[in-house]
Image (cartoon, rainbow, N blue to C red):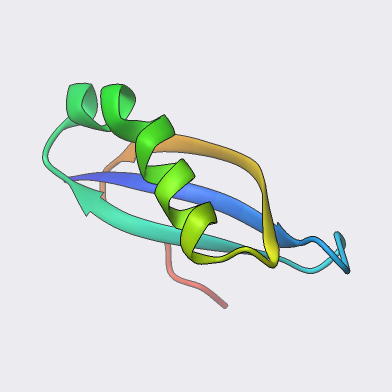
Length: 64
């Protein structure tokens, strides 16, 4: 399984960040669609700014 991972921070409080993870078909799809997925997410969440994104394969990490 491949995951698209977006790191976004609040525009008003840049120290407050969160990761958004979503499964995607494969690595190539993730790489090719990553910018579009990030742009759509930012359009839907105007109070957030993009810190970065990546594609990662394997099981999702557990949050602590």
